[in-house]
Length: 84
Image 1 (tube, rainbow, N blue to C red):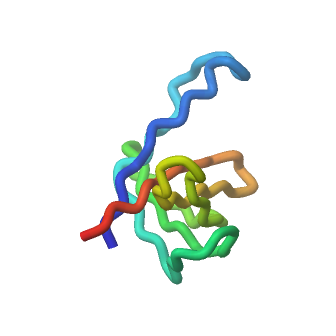
Image 2 (cartoon, helix red, strand yellow):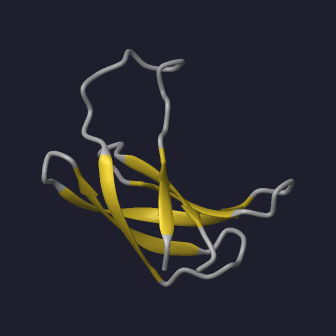
């Protein structure tokens, strides 16, 4: 399924740092259903791989679907779903 990684900007809440950036995501069990939980596998630019707990959301204005994932280490990613 085609997902586009959204850049998250936490500079308003935290000091900017050299945190690894996500370069590839794979989402298992994705459904177009609000608050559906799924697994998000992420590859970061430093070569690290992580599995995040993801939640499906829908923008009420545009209708776009997205998955937001986070794990216990604080690693997070947001990916927008694009229709094929």
